[in-house]
Length: 76
Image (cartoon, rainbow, N blue to C red; front, side, top):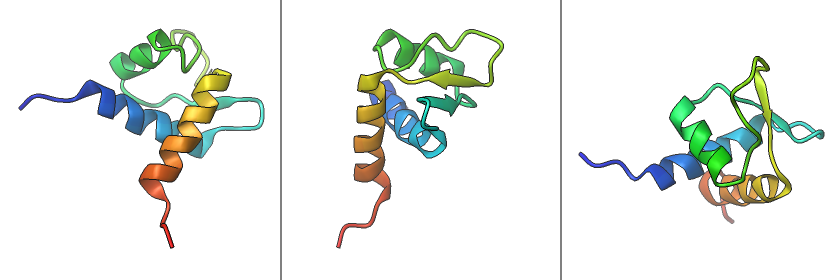
């Protein structure tokens, strides 16, 4: 089975929106490879540190909200 890593990255970015605080930080309890890819794509700060959270860039915040709404909200 071949995995679409971009779809995995989108799902994780959308889920980061769930724990996003007003300072732009979210809990980083996801797969390290995926978190590194999100960092390489410019959506989050460097996840390699002792903090249990990671900051999202402005682009990352906007994309995480968009993806969250697309994937997890009920359309009327």
